[in-house]
Length: 189
Image (tube, rainbow, N blue to C red):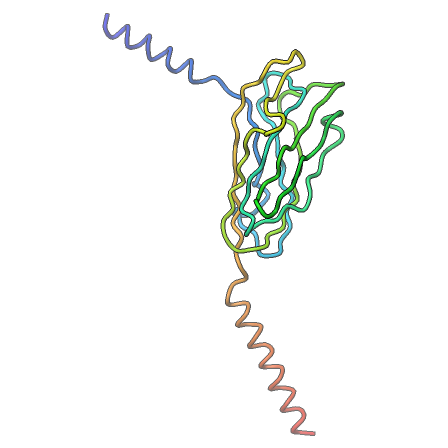
């Protein structure tokens, strides 16, 4: 009898923990090894996935390390959300893209969809988290009947690496070789 109770509790525990929440995330998979070089530009996608309930929109903030990355622009796909597509502010001093907002009037979106694409430039060496949080202006993702949708954030990170010292040494050696060769050619003439 005791074994039967334990089995029932175990089945209930497993079944309640398998509920899949919708996801709002940032895709860093296009960056090889998660590393950029100084000066590199990259466009990363903010996406929705596993939305079992259709949404009419919502909002999200993005925090990043301002000494490592700069946000150049936020790009919206006009075919996905047909009404509101805006960003309240991009503050590269604080490392904040505040309130990336999207909404639809004519259609609802379920499954996977693109919220926005963010164009970054690597401006300093180091590691930058890409942390998503609820928008301070319009936080919940909602259905057409105005019900909040439960969702989780999937954050990312980017590492910016400086040019390796070997490149600088190679460049200095190459310049030295050219100067030496030039001096020899001048001395023969």
